[in-house]
Image (cartoon, rainbow, N blue to C red; front, side):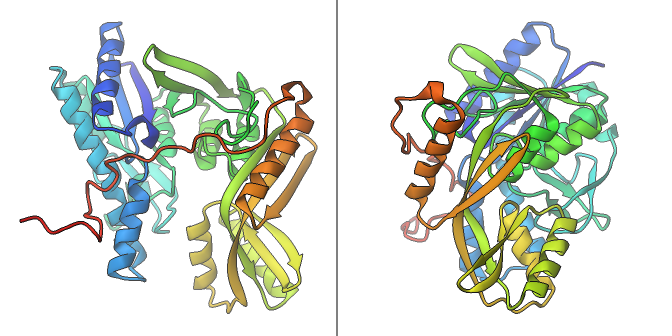
Length: 387
């Protein structure tokens, strides 16, 4: 059985009618001769943030397992909506969530790691259905509890499923068709990179690039899964970047709201950084007027929780925007307190890297959109009670 594995990010579902648009794309793929399809979906853009905010309104310190279960409902809703859209086209379809995907993880709630896989549940579903919709970013631990694989980790689910089904390619759909030399929403003149190596894009991701999740890229490299980055437009699917074994590019990344932890001593800072590195949480050391510090660049919530579990009494916790210059021989991080200043710096760095893009004015372009339906699962605090 040949299976096509596709992943659709939250930006693919800004409006409810977008589920119909994706469903029609799946129907076209089947009509073109593809055998079976697994479509991995993310929560609608903004939903995970809304769910987290709702949980914290109820309890400022929910248990990690409780929070994971709540956040996973965003992807579960997307699977149900896409299943309804596909079913409406007369296509045999079934949706599966973390309880039934066959992906087992450890119990590091907030950013669990995949430990084992079992392809039989998905294979059984594909025997009876042409399309299987899979909830991204979730698994179950050894005790059967739902775990969250981390923010933006639907990419990882898709790569894991492609690997477990013996497929060597996976298509990742987002609001941009591929990997750019900078965020095209922030830096005018950002260049699309046609082909890029796993290690290069994973390094970009660890320093703020959002197009692919770094642990998904690591898993793809380990299991020889080629990633095709695409965008679904009114004219069909547009392929922008292939992630495989070759290709490099200089780039600049922007990571907003990184966590700056001020420690009481250099020794304490070094111990914390070593611990975070062991858990694959990207950090840099920093020294300022307050003394020794660490800046956490990715997996921020998870990293802070790991620090809290050590019992370390931090002097303070703040935030910065990290602008990182990346090329094969250089990694330089600039921390900015002002976001607009950070964008300006990113533009200047990119202009220096790619002078041919000169003439563009540095500054923010249109911000990425949130779904207008991102709070379907929870009622906003200021919404009136229904009568």
